[in-house]
Image (cartoon, rainbow, N blue to C red):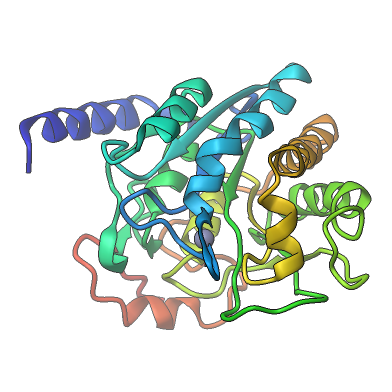
Length: 298
Ligand SMILES: [Zn+2]
């Protein structure tokens, strides 16, 4: 739409092409890509009655604490966000500069779905962040979110770390273990319930496309959905600055624990076939009517 946007898109495309030989090469770098979920234009869930405590704003403020934990352990880390970065207020702009947030200029407002640049049968909203992780040949991609299940609740919430099928379990296990050791029921009340890991891969669109696209390129990926903003205990904990930083650092430590013991990588072998053994995926892919999406025939 705007000339500068076209220039940026062209630059991204050129970089993507230049990086093509590395795609599918696992362990291409030791950089961790952190993605701030949603974007300021469409900021995600917020705590009931506390509009300032919302997903996107929280992670603009605290992704730096995750990043710092990773860098202190000797790894590289880049923070990205799918938005334009132009609607940030002064406070968030300061946090964005500190974290060095890379804006990918594809906010995808209104639930716009589009195919992955690298694996075009993977269709979803926000898949540009997975593409960025692939372009960077990330050692791990972690999508920073919070969860919500509606109106106010107390006690236990079903805290989860979502991950990709082939590569993500050790990463997700490490993040969940760190949160269980130091945060959940240790300051952030959760009725004694632990954070668990959920593998997500079957749906051919929606958020699993982030997971699938990363999996295809051999990148472990995890979505952090451990805190429920509608849980009053979680919200009260995260509204405190020191607690929020504790929460972010615990995620960082989990990622570092994974990086110290990385698992062998699985890379998709045939881009014309559904992910091996992924029941029903090809049939679902044939129902997608998104421009540019690749439909699997078998
Ligand atoms: Zn979210």
